[in-house]
Image 1 (cartoon, rainbow, N blue to C red):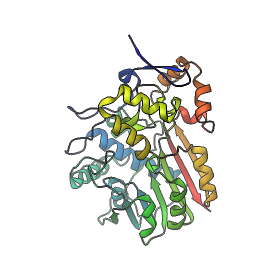
Image 2: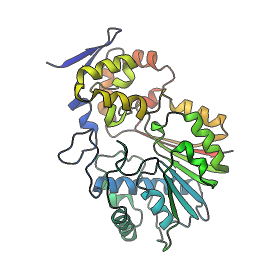
Image 3: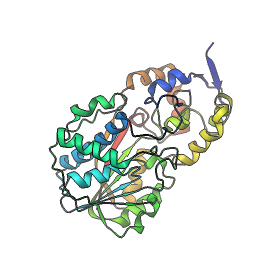
Image 4: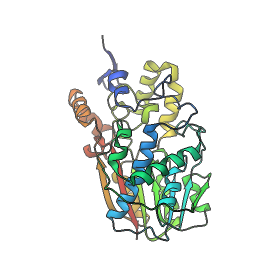
Length: 341
């Protein structure tokens, strides 16, 4: 018999971790649970695919906006292992590429596992030297990724000199770097607690015409709380009020309830902010919208069926989060480009 959970308002939801959650996640390393940090070892083919895709998408978007990287400065906030700015510094005529992150490998639940950065760099450069940036040459590595934004093929020329620097800093301390950047890339804003402060920092480290590129998985999307705090209820994080979410987690995820609840509040931006509110904050701090792409998830049809199977789905969503659009609820990954005015 299927397990069910009833919230304080009498709404009843079906609980099924296997079919509502695990089937939608990228597979983990053998012998680990879906919520475990990967074991220490060289990164996987899937992880290489993610790096190649992100680099390719960044350069594709800049090219589509007719932007030149020559003699420009690039900052990757939340860089992780630093491969994205490091490789960009080696395949473009950029003047400087900087990566910042408050955590080194394995220092946080969302960090990379410990691995050889040199091995990873050599593999990626060898791959690019052979194939340039051609989506079809690495798409097999992206079997479980969303990639409806397919970047056009780009020919690249490898540089001999690396123009990369790393600083162990959080986004809110980015102004400690003595540079004004032409391009800033953020792929982890859903983990920042103070978006208003983030935009104030961005305004300090950029100049007129600088571009900010967000790659953003909305909290309100199907896997918004990531694998670490997503429940076994479709959109449980949106359909349940915070207190009901905690009650549910303590009942159905007893073995890791503290970790889930901690990540839900402290590992993700809180209070929750919609994409529309993000754009309003951007405007208040001197940034205008230049490009917005909403990549639908690969599993869109399945989650549409889930939403139709839940009684009063939209009434509950609108009651809990009246500022959230249906477009955001069904989103996969947002690519948002802002320009400093």
